[in-house]
Amino acid sequence: MDFSTLIGAFSKSLLLVVAAILPIVNPPAMAPTFLSMTEGASQATRSALALRIGRNVALTLIAAMLVGSYVLDFFGISLPIVRVAGGMIVASSAWKLLSASATSADARSELAETFTAEHVRATAYYPMTFPITFGPGSLAASITIGAALHDPHVTLSLARFAGGMVGAAVVGLAVYLTYRFARKMLQPLGETGTVVFLRLSAFILVCVGVQIVWDGASELARQVLQEAAAQGNR
Image 1 (cartoon, helix red, strand yellow):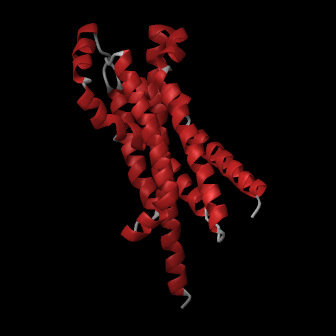
Image 2 (spheres, rainbow, N blue to C red; image 1 turned 45 degrees about the vertical axis):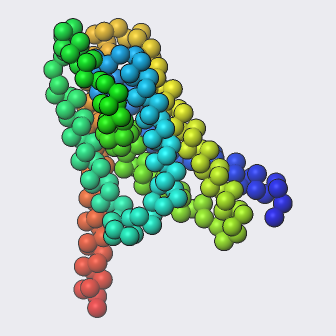
Image 3 (cartoon, rainbow, N blue to C red; image 1 turned 60 degrees about the vertical axis):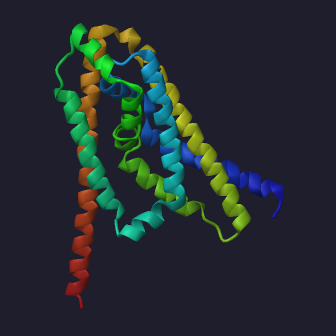
């Protein structure tokens, strides 16, 4: 197999991962949620947390592409179940943000004390990475892409997965940079505008969680109806 074919497979896989996953992750839309969940944290703490989340997103994406389908098959878990469970977690976390009361300056100082290095490590993956940033939709898409990257030719398959890994790194970098500079992105809105925007973002995230649950439940219902129809035709 010539070198140009391998480069082409590498490039196509890279673009496929970025084009398919980045719009689903949508870091700019999740930046307000990141700010809400790190209320009271210093900029240095936010930067450290953003770095961890970006790294976790890339690693989770790579793991989902490589072994995601095998893990689900091993435990007998279907993608609709993942959507329902993940959607419930997303909606629950978003509801807490939506119903949270405004914090005073003294409360912010108290919150800042809770954001220690241990707290950052504890929350970097759950819930900040999964399911808030990298949710069930991203996981399902990653597993689907991973299945599509396989090829009977080992060399071509390796080139595709190498491109997919680089694409995952690009997605993780986009998440890190967006979260790292989230405060500057929202600074033109002012304090009042930022609060309003954060509340709206939390409400939208609740809707996203409900939509994910609905999609998963609808697919499960269709499967049940199909199985019932198949048994009725026997």
